[in-house]
Length: 256
Image (cartoon, rainbow, N blue to C red; front, top):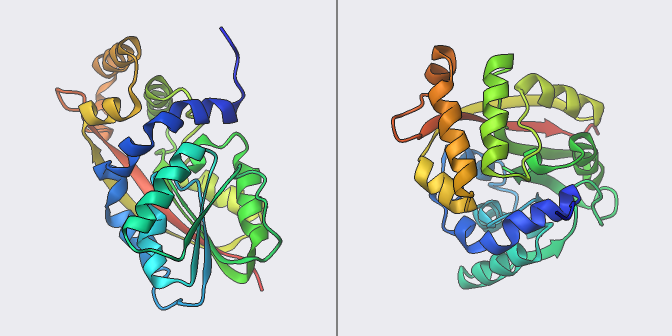
């Protein structure tokens, strides 16, 4: 078996699934996406970076409100789909660039906003990604992230991280709100606000989108069946494996 770096694992997991993420209902809409897009309204001169753009939904949502939207991702296949979809939507201010979140190829203070949605839990170095986001925004600029969050209770956290990595082996870690705030502070970001959301995950679509191997799917279902009452209640686990998870929008600013 060939060992892969974290970056290689992410590319292998997502490169061939770009179209699946473009049409994913969970990714294409939602209150969290609307809340993220609202931050860009009235900022027609802004230059915005979408870190880990995936299927491009953040870029599509923010582009109509800003001057320039840079969709940035590790996967060339994802970026190809985003470029094509942006053109089809008439979003001429969307450009794409490939690279790692932990080492952005942009000068200091070159964006008015840096945003990301459902990407940070794949980063090999979470703190480095936040530091880079802070570095590339202008003083007073916004750094905003939507991501899955854990409840901060060990039993719930252990269960959730386990099913996440069984479903997608490029998963690194979902973090609690406190962990987000601590990491943002270490990156020099201030004024954090948080908006919470709860999303129902339809199990069959969740598995199909990642093309999770049957053995891994069976392991997830076994963990669900063996879970404690507290775990089953918190995640609202249903008979078919569908469940609920918590997400949050974190909004920080760079001092200045």
